[in-house]
Amino acid sequence: MGTWGTAISSNDTFADTYYDFFTLYNDGFEVPEITQQLIDQNQETLNIPEDANNFWLAIAKCQWECKQLDPQILNRIKEIIDADADILIWKELGADIKTLKKRREHLDKFLAQIQTERTKPKVRKKKIIREPIFEKGDCLIFKLNNGNFGGAFVLEAIKGTEYNYNLIASTRINKVKQPTEKDFKDADILVKNYSNRKDDVNIMWYLPIDHKNLPKIDILYNLEVNNSFDPNKTQFGFVNNFTMWFIETIDEQFKHEQISHQPSIKIPAKKFIKKDFFKFW
Image (tube, rainbow, N blue to C red; front, side, top):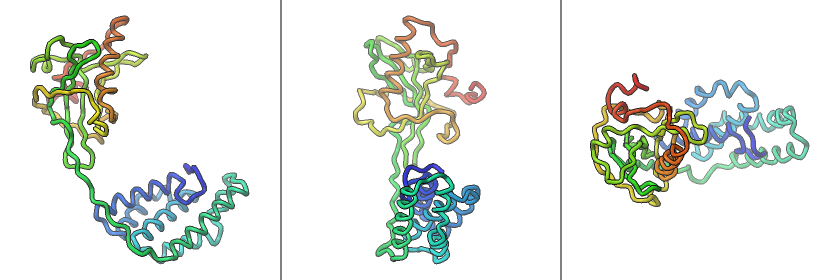
């Protein structure tokens, strides 16, 4: 039980259940359907007494906020609190008298709250659909610390979701003059080995949270990418700082190579563009 306080919501189980409930609620599902779905999906949690209590407390809170508190759920919460079932578990886990007192106060306050009908049901939040900053296949250029042009390649653009995902690969482009389309076609993906990294390919899912504060980035060309990448099915991490993860990373790698060796592997960008990507990877 990941717990950081005595409040009803101060544990991982409550927080996760509450989040999952209102994610489905905002997707348009009805409260009884959501409740049953979460019960079905959390059978393992329900077999752990301390987690089960927090799960039911979260369900009760969510239903109450939607002004659809099921009487059976309310009775379950009454049983948990009136029988001191939750307090006994906290005691078994080593909570001291002061902590138990605070927990009981929170439980009593919560029970009083959900026995008073809420004035209005919680309003469903409308999802905001965001489009990615770059298009799939975009060839991006920017200035490096050495004054040369560096480049990055957009491998994917996920559209029609709440998140504007772009899968971006830094390249080894390091040109005095503006790179050509051929430079991008012939480029290698940046592989990092500075700071004891072990041939770490610099490809990341980019979420442009702070995109307005970036240095100048130009889109020169757009190359066809025949592969598709799913953010839920790739090993690539998620970042929100373009400068740090795509520009400064190139600078650090090239700086490292001035005093040490290059990575032991080379990965042509064209391998990511063609259909044989997964065989290569």
